[in-house]
Image 1 (cartoon, rainbow, N blue to C red):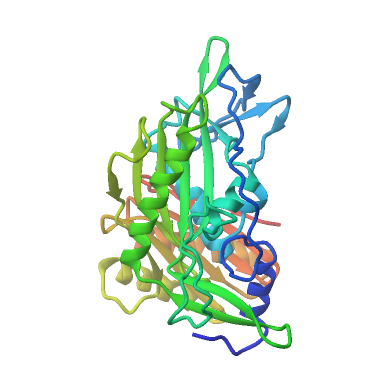
Image 2 (cartoon, helix red, strand yellow; image 1 turned 135 degrees about the vertical axis):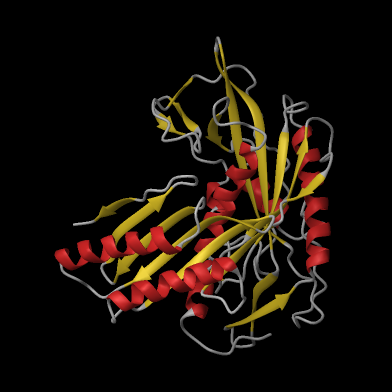
Length: 381
């Protein structure tokens, strides 16, 4: 499908094209680079952060008093929307927690796949770039004929273990962000960009994702010191760029050693945007909460929620309440009313976050952890 309207989404995409490395055919192919960072399997001179906010988070390592950014940070921080980017990163941490517990491992950004290597892998395969994971192009620009870009991003996270002498690498997590819609651009005869989107077959996307995951594992195993380091791989499928819900991880797999994942396990995750026309108990709960809140102040701009499900079980619910500006006493009363409505109508035993926003930003924030009955809240001055 060709985009014909201007501004808005096109402005966002045009800006994104300046930084994305794998979502367009227009960019030049990089030179092949197989010289990934060689890990130092001796102890790392580092210290961990003293405080761990909760067992849901890893303590981070600080090297020489500084946080160590990812070696491919300039490449990995780009997807088709900020929502997908956040879910891609936070979701990989959730995948990793199943293999590397937060009470046994410490977190460090990826240190072994550098920017040049990531760019090479994300690009199309060619004679100049034999390590490209995306398939070679066929010269077509028509979405019905063009060979698409399947893999949009690679994310690496490292997990360290403490020894008597210091910290050593104990595990690696790799996230692969796959497209379900390939957004790309083509220059016309006047050197202007025309923007297109190409729907991808999800069975092909999943098949290629597993193939790419095994190739990444195999290439990491070639690095001295990583031959027997556990590597977990998560396959993330991006939501369309105008989606408020964001993408989810569809599969995960673990390689204890050797050049491939032993087994790909479905995660059975999905995101649901509320309100929804689908009938369900959760949809009914949200509708009752929404009606109760809207009756309190008639000039609300909107109330939306994003439910995160695994195995058809609601794990978390994030709600945005858009308001006009209110005075401090009104905001206090409004926040108290929302707390009452959330306690009465929203599902129990579900992690819930509620952001109350206006054109000035966040006015108040409420949160309840899974298993708790009481909301914590903060009203911003």
